Image (cartoon, rainbow, N blue to C red; front, side, top):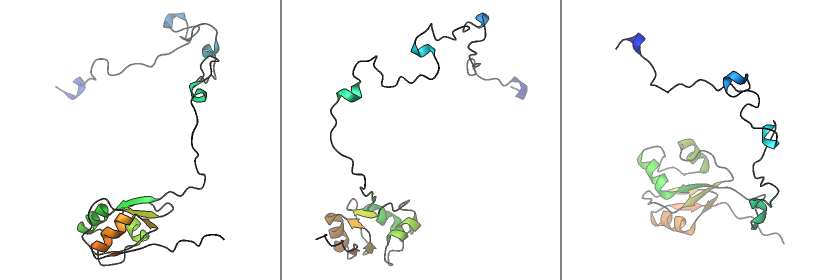
Length: 158
């Protein structure tokens, strides 16, 4: 085989369908849209329209509520932290802050804070400063000889 003999596989390249270019094209006049009606005209958006019947999204019951000021936390597991310590990406002796977690590449961004969860096993005794932590995660860190520091909860409004 020579360079000038190289070809695409049969049917790999198809030419663009040219509609509304006369009767000889096979897609002339109405350009494959049929005659009259909403879909034959331009600027049509029929998503969710059911011909006047009550649409499905309106027939189904609506439940719940989305809190507009809900906080979104980045989640970190103990096993992930241990993996980064083993790989040498996190210094196991220094205090582990949220900024240190971002700098190490373990989390991409803090969002409204970082929450520590207990999945995995932590062997290193670390001092971890995060926005939130599960009870199981706090127990696991203390069992490994470390400490979890959480910011003081704001006082309840009286």
